Length: 157
Image (cartoon, rainbow, N blue to C red; front, side, top):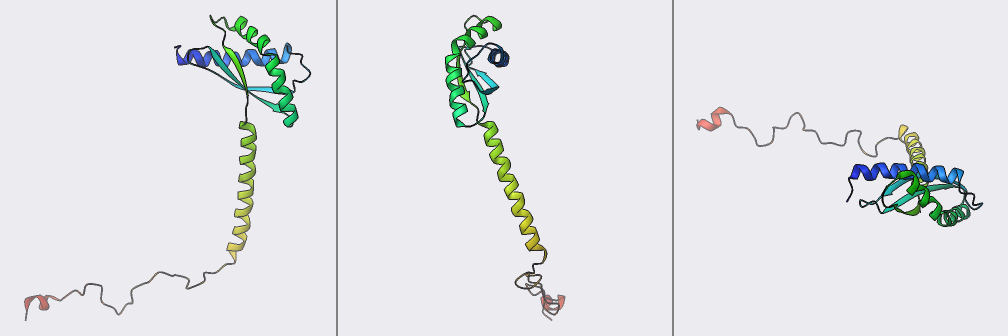
C-alpha cells in the first residue's frame, strides 16, 4: 500500500502524460476533441482510472472511447516511461459526466429563477384571503388568563 500523497502525485502525472500523448502521439481519426479531466490511482498503484470528456454528440463519444481503448497500450507505455514507477498501472478510461451534469443543474437553476421571478410578479399585487393579521390578539377589556386574584381575595377578608 502506497502513501496516499504519492498516489495523488502519480495520478496527476498520469493525467498530464496521457493528455500530452493524446495530443501529440495518438493519430487515430476516431479520436475527437478529448479532454482529460482527472485521473485516480488505486492505493496499491497498479490501476489508474482516467476520466475524459469529448466535445460532440453520442457518436463522437463512442468513436473516441473506441480510439482510447485501441491506444491504451501506447498510452500505458508512455506512462511507464515518463513516471518511472516500478509497476506501470493498468489504464481504464471512463467518460466524465461532470460537465454534462453541471450544465443540466445550471439549466434547472435558470428555470427556478424564472419561476421565482414570475411568482414575485404575482405576489406584488396580492392580498391575504382573510384578515391582514390572522393572529389572535387579546381584547383590552379581558382579564389575563388564569384570573389573578387581588391581595384581598387571598387574605379572606
